[in-house]
Image 1 (cartoon, one colour):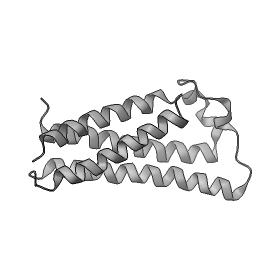
Image 2 (cartoon, helix red, strand yellow):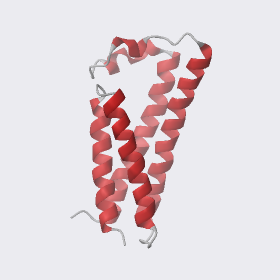
Image 3 (spheres, rainbow, N blue to C red):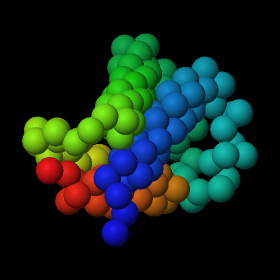
Image 4 (tube, rainbow, N blue to C red):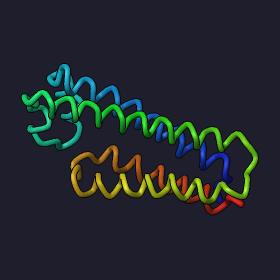
Length: 139
C-alpha cells in the first residue's frame, strides 16, 4: 500500500505538470498553432484543433478557459503537495474527496469530448489512482 504522503506527492505533481502544460500549450494554440503540429502528431488529434478561431469574443473565451483550467490544476496540485508536507488531519478526507471529484469530473469531460487526447487521459487516471490511495489512508 502506498503511503499518504507519496500518493499526495504523485497526484499533486501530475496536476501541476498538467496545469503548466495546459497553460503553455493553450497559449501557443491561440498565438502560433502551427508550432504545435509536431506535438499533435503524437496523438491522433483532429485537424480542426489547429483551425484558428476567427470570432474574437470566442477566441478570448477559449484562451481564458485554457488559462483558468491550467491554473485550476496548478492550485489543486499545490494543495495536494502542501497536504503531503503536513501531518494528516481529520478534515483531510473531505478535502481530498473534493479534489478527487474534480479529477473524476475532468476525466469524464475528457472521455466525452477529447477521447483522442490519450496522454492526458492516462495522466488523469494516474492522478485519480494516487489521490484515491491517499484518501483511503487519510484519517
